[in-house]
Length: 249
Image (cartoon, helix red, strand yellow):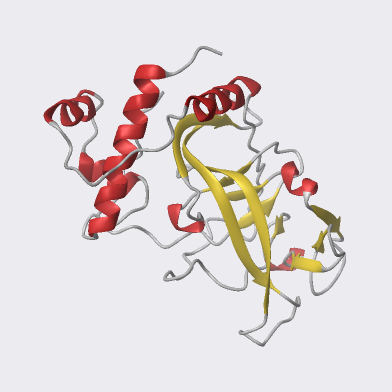
């Protein structure tokens, strides 16, 4: 598998493009700041429709703040959708909402509507939780209309060109799902980051062309923040435990 993604000193703002892809069997997000407190570091990969591979470095829940109306002007009135088991894929072109959303929501697509190209209904109450942008506002893709970026962040620029043609897909293999389930069952998903890395831990990183600083940046954290450095050390120890104790599935 490829080495950890190289990130600049200053992290770019989060990608604002969330695309519904009914052919994708998983959700993916580019930026760490979209994830909540249940984030788990985990090395894996997804493939696209052509068989190309994109590295996965974690998984967690993402709560998207969405527009409560397709032509909303009240910035204080929002809805939301909750995406479970989202894979963290920094190298993906954009964020992907896959078919698993249909476990909790119903997707209605209507590319001919003037104000939106469809909407997302919450199954528990039948209320609209999100709208898709009109097709005239970009490429022929179902893009969720977001109401706000992750807390403490501003939206970046969409990587999608208005006249571009895209095939947005992500597939997570059954083998990789079983690997994740086995590691979860093994209890190798938590570690402390309070203590500094030992000589052996730093050597493990160096042999893999990584560093404590690089881990922090790769996972979308700020090395100048003490709690982020501790999280980076915890991530290092979790990845080490995976490498040493990964079950055969």
